[in-house]
Image 1 (cartoon, rainbow, N blue to C red):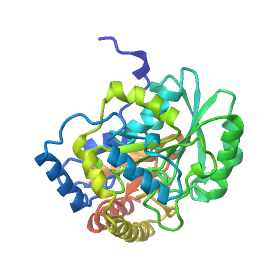
Image 2 (tube, rainbow, N blue to C red):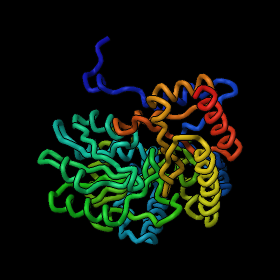
Image 3 (cartoon, one colour):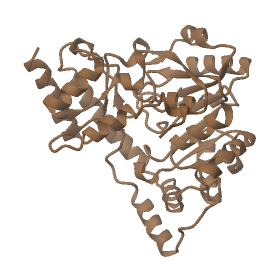
Image 4 (cartoon, helix red, strand yellow):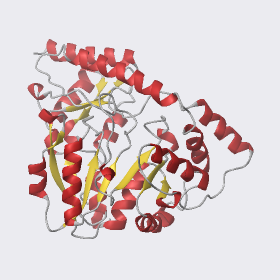
Length: 377
C-alpha cells in the first residue's frame, strides 16, 4: 500500500515506545508523564450526574459555554484578559497544538521549536508541511533560552515560534527577561507565538509567566491532563484572538467535531476545586526533592533542578549514549526511562525521569539504576 509522503519522516513517539516496553512484570516506569493521583472527587461526581442526565451527545464545536466561561474567569484571575469567544476546548492539549499549527503554518514555513523539547512539536510542524528549526535550551541557565542563539535561527521564513514553560522534558521555567526578549523579537517580525503552558500550575520556585504578558498575539495552550490528572479524559483548550480561534475551529470541526461531553463536565467541576491543585503540587515538590537527592548518589550524574512540571533531565553521558543507556536500564535494572534523544539532538547524553510516580517507585527505581551502573563501572 502506498502511504502519503507527509508521514514518511514521522516516527512513533520515543515516549510511547518506552511506554509499550514498560508493561513487563516487575518493571518500574519512570518514563511516562502521567500523575498517579485520582481525578478530583467533584469531577467523578460530575461525570456520574452527566451520565444520569444522558449528557452524552454532541456539544458546541468550541466547547460547552459554561466551561469556556469558567476557563475565562480562571485565566482572568491569572492576569489574562479574554472572553469565552476567544477560547476553544479541544481533545487534549495535543489537539490544540495541532489546530494552531494547521491554521497558521503552510508548506515551506519554518517553525522554531525548543531543543530539547516535547516530542510532538517537530512531527506536527512536518505534518502541516512546515520545517521545524530547533533553538537551544541551555542547561547552565536552568534550560532557559540563550537569546543570541535564538535570534540567530530566526529567519525570513519563520512563521511561528513555539515556547514551552514549564518545559517537557527539562522542567525548566523560562525567565521573564527571556520571555520579554522573545516576545519583542516576535512582535517586531510579526510572528505569532504558540505557547505550550500545560504545566503552568505546577511550579515550585518562581511563578509561571506567560509570553502573552509581552506579546498579545500569543496563542496559549493549556489542559487538564497534568493539573487535574485527567490524562485519559483528553481535554485541553487554547485561547487567542477570536479570528485565530475561528481558524482553529475550522480544522477542529472536521477532525473532531466536538470534544467529549463527559470530560467537559469533569473539567468544569475541577475548576471549582480549591485545594486539589495545591495539595498535588506540594506532593510533587516532595517527590522532586527525593529524586534529586537519590540522583545525587550516582557518581558523575549532573541534574539541573526543575522549576516546574514533574520531570528531571539528568546528564548521564558518562554512562554512554541515551538510547543505549535506556535499553540497558530496562534490560538489566527493569526501570523504564525516556532517552534524551527522543526530545531532539541536544538531548543526547540525557535521560528523562518522571517523578509523577509515587515515592516508593521513585526511590526503588533510582536505587536500581544506581546499582546497575555501579556494578558494571
